[in-house]
Length: 318
Ligand SMILES: [Zn+2]
Image (cartoon, rainbow, N blue to C red):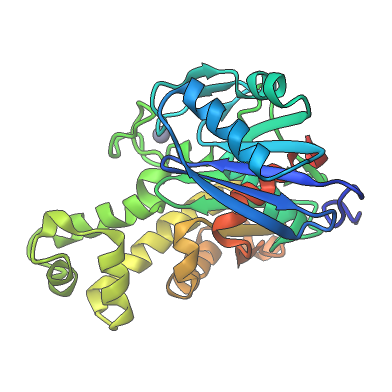
C-alpha cells in the first residue's frame, strides 16, 4: 500500500473555482490544503462573461501558483468543456486556454464531480486510499475514480460519467438522450420521481400532504421530511431508493473492485436516512459477496466546498 493521496506538493498557494449552474465558488488553499479564503460570484450566461468572472474572481483571491476550475459537463484532457447541459450557450468552450491567456499561470480544468472526488481523496473521507470511487448524489449523479493510486481520466478525459450507466433501457428518458440512466433513479430528482410514482393510487398520504396536497409537487425533500416523522410509506420509498443506489454501486464494484465508496452531493446531508437501506441492498446485490471484503460505504466530509477544493488540487493530480 502506498501513501498516494496523503500529501500535497509543498510551498504552493492554490486557487480552486467551482462553476455551478447559478454560483461560482472560489477558494484559496494553503500548502497544507486548508481553505484560507473563499468568495462567491453569480454564474453569468455565455462563455465570454464566464471567463471575465473567473479572471476577476481569481484576481480578487490574490497571487497563486495555480488555478483549477471545476465545471459541470464533459471536459476534454486539453481543458475544453465540450458540453454542459446546465450552463447557457456552452459548447466546445476552451476554458483552460482562455484562462491561461488571461492569467499566465498554470490552469487545470476538470469535471466538477471529478474535482469533488479529488478533494475527498486528498483531504477528506478517502484520504490515503488507492482504490476508491466517489459518487455525488445530487440533482444528477456524478463520479470520480481513483485506481492504482491515480486519478483515472480516460482516453478523452470523460471518465466517471457513472450517472449515465443505463440500469433500465426502457426506463424514463434522461437529458443525455437515452433512457433509464442510473441518475434517473439514484439522484435527488430520482427520489422525487420514485415518490410521485408511489403516490399514484392515493398512497403516500403524509408525503403528499407535506407537498401541499398535490401529488405532482412531491419532491425528495417531502419524502425525507415524512421519513423523519417515521411515516412507513415514506420509509418504503427511501428503501426503494437505497436499492437503486446500491444496484449502481454493485455494478461499479464488478468493474473497478474498489475498497471504498465515498457518497457525496446534496443527499449526503441526510446520510442517516440512507446509509442503512443502501448498505443492506448493497450486501444483497454484490457479486460473490462471500469471496471478498465488502467495499466500505462512507459519506463525504468536505461538504459543498469539495468541488472548489478539488479544483485547487488538480495541478497536483493531472
Ligand atoms: Zn443519461
